[in-house]
Length: 351
Ligand code: SAM
Image (tube, rainbow, N blue to C red; front, side):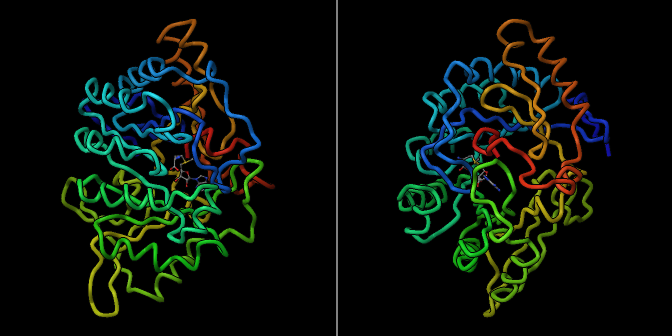
């Protein structure tokens, strides 16, 4: 259903009637970790001159907000691996105080930025696939778990809105479901398991590692009673359809322990592969090298870097509108795939 919003007219509406309100910006493809499900360190990083400059990203944001975008997520690579990222974030907040600013991070480098993130009201999705130090190092290539947990504790103390994302991998972190989900028992955070997506040519993705949401749910039910999180729409009616509420694509449950205790946070599943949420997708992505990407599962990208550098905002706007008009239903691409659904690695797209 097409949204109406007087402040932000619905200009980025696609051929399926979906309106883009949410831009995910990869500020760099560089990362200090090398998660084996995400990238392969033999693949070189994009040369600096091909990465959008911050002032170019700012110009894209100006155009996107004029077209009705009111939520921005900064991702990467690792956003804090790029010098000057925090100053850039402060600038964006000053210029767009009413735009929701969000961050996806591995949590290793954001320690010095935490107070500022709190002041700016930025919420953080933290990627954390294991609480076992050795396993964490094996997945990410670095022994950084203590740093991440310390930064997580500080975020909770500061009251920064926090979600945990764990890529669900059978035989890798499935045994850790109780430990990971228990974090939602004790703290007001959503712990979400993301189905492992077949992205990129050289990651460890395989059918054997794929752990479908239905099985994850069954495992969780062995430990807790799961009570669906019911959200209230603006008109007061109830809904457990989180995508429709713009809470993102996660399905969420409160956990009820055998002793009757209810979790402070929620347990969530992001069923990108087995149960798509394409019909309510309101996202557009800007890759680190300045391409508009309309769907994770579609490798067609629409370059705007040259238009930004050599032409003007009108041309960028034209390319964005054209890209949105071609936004596919990703689930259809997924259903017709043989091998990886998209060849570009996640670290270059931003997730
Ligand atoms: N470096 C940041 C981080 O670690 O969160 C941001 C970039 S990372 C590419 C963004 C998200 O994509 C992370 O939550 C990561 O777990 C997720 N991701 C990467 N590859 C994935 C895959 N094949 N399937 C599902 N999620 C994936």
